[in-house]
Image 1 (cartoon, helix red, strand yellow):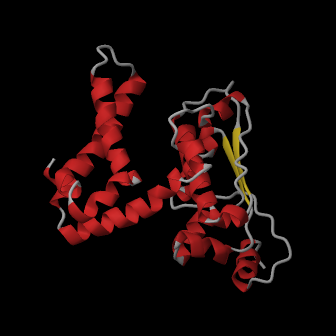
Image 2 (cartoon, rainbow, N blue to C red):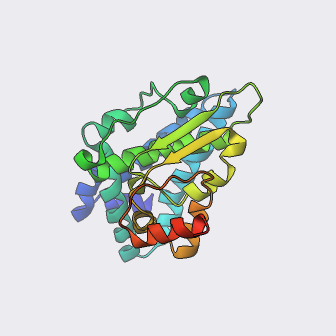
Length: 231
């Protein structure tokens, strides 16, 4: 409470409109709303737990940091999260109205994220990575049966959309009846966006069972291909 009031005064007044504080307020509202429900289902319990974590971080942990650390966090987080409030992105992710979910692919539906990186830049990457991550988590959660449909993740220019979560997902994707197809220019592009060292990169690439190489001018990619097929 003290921390909240300090931001509500003086030079920090302009921060009140930022996405950082909107999340803080919404977390409190969601907790109050969910607590008022006498008989909660599993989804409501899970949501309540998530909002409590958010609220606890902003009210307790963040208030324990010194002012410089706190200011740095606010600037970094709000600079990233405010992108979700821009036209188009806000409509897709932050209106509270959802008509499309990752689980729809379990029914055989195909979801296409038509947000070109070369047109939208970082906003395209943020949107698609968010949805991809949510989809991967839902795939990992589901308990499959022989009658369940297979699902797939098909990604062109994959270097823009890979994350450090991908190696873990790839290692268990087969048991979740998920097929992953990534296309990229060269392996150095993956290293650049993932920040992988050589060992981590090889671990990531080793999860792909079928590799197709086309004409390529990148030395490291061609050396990797040569070693993979035994020269």
